[in-house]
Image 1 (cartoon, rainbow, N blue to C red):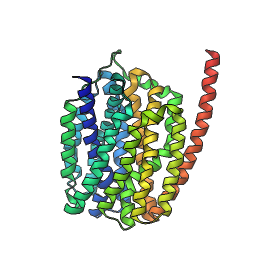
Image 2: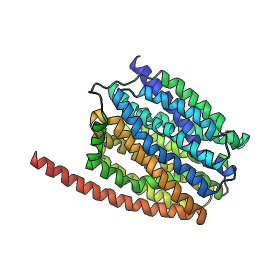
Image 3: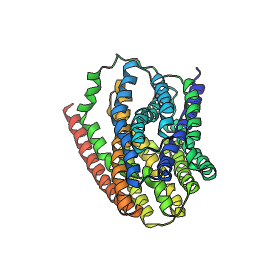
Image 4: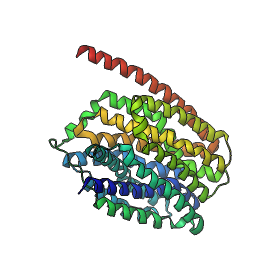
Length: 390
């Protein structure tokens, strides 16, 4: 397939998959709330999925590296997502939903990471910037939030399965047309994958960024509920996510202009400081309109953080374990952070308020910025020591 067509169909896949993902992130908590569930139960449902993802993502990454294919694994996970979503989004029994969510995220959570891993490899093969391809996922997310929010405001959120299944079906059809990126290394074994566990820099980095990713995932889970607490409805939620992801798309699209100016860790620290401002702003500026306006900061928080962190992880792990490393990073970001953010966020939200939750998120993020500064200092010293012995 011509390189131009490869990028085109990959961009389409990212557009529709992330369009589907916005329905899960932005509207599924509100769907469960409309079903009569409490915030703590919703938090537990949102947490059980990432728990399953922590176990599943490294597995799918290993399978991808072992067989030297991303596309085929991607197609399998998309089929799993389509099947299990029927059970997750058509049932009102709490225990059944918990089980369905766990299985759903076994397939859903690695799909985005595999798509991003394929985008990194495709970008390198066609001499393009990763962000310029990944931005189509953000555009899909943004367009979906706006259109689906209006759709739910008109038809009601009980029909959540219809737009989700529509998006996933098109994502699958476009993924069929994506060119695989074959790797030309020796087959990866379980023992090779375990070597990542001995990479101290990689593990320390994953531990440090938890201070930023836990508040981010708590916001993903509860921003919709916070908007309704402040008097908004589904259309306000959709508009809030549209503004957020539209700003993210701009950051991804322009990353080739600004990304090389500093070390990745510097960009992550800058994103962390802006994260803190964003969370404190959400805590103390009341009303759904204020929430929508503050979502502009999403681009320079998540967008900058994700591009920098994903590229930094690419440098930290060996070439033949790239998919494994990427999915471990995603496991921490969307898995472990999702569990902690959903569980503790739900308890704080239910027992106090959304404003209290966002205040605590701001404080936690500031601690993370300090930890990243220390990480940067220690890492630079270690690199200088290694160079002196080389």
